[in-house]
Image (cartoon, rainbow, N blue to C red; front, top):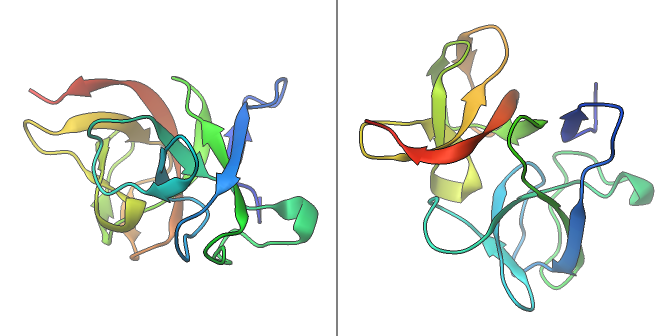
Amino acid sequence: MPNVIYRGPAERQPQTLNKPVTGALLPGTAVLIGGTAFTQATAPTAGRIGLLANRNFYAQGDTDAYVSGETGVAYRLEPEQEYRWAMAAATYTQGQELTIAASGRLAAAATGNVVVAFFDQAGGAVAAGALADVVISRPYVKP
């Protein structure tokens, strides 16, 4: 399904927030939901995390960066919702625990990392920045 970040369930619409972005941010990457703007998240630390959407109503593709200062659209993340999220380059397996890493991408969670999602497609090598299907989890620290 091209140009779609939210994957489902299809019977409901995800909640979104609209705020200016503070850089050339890409759809499918994590953002911190600040009081006045979205900034790139690089770890699942303090603050509310959202997932930047593409503005398909503006014909913005899912790999077209926002311009700093533009109004961005971000999804409010809920457990068990499915999204396409930009990934760090690695080989992943179905169900693998994921955490937020550099550039707001997801990466394999190591012991002590906060897990925010699970890899939800056939396992294999994923290129840096490629969008992959994930399911949001309730955040927890990987034992």
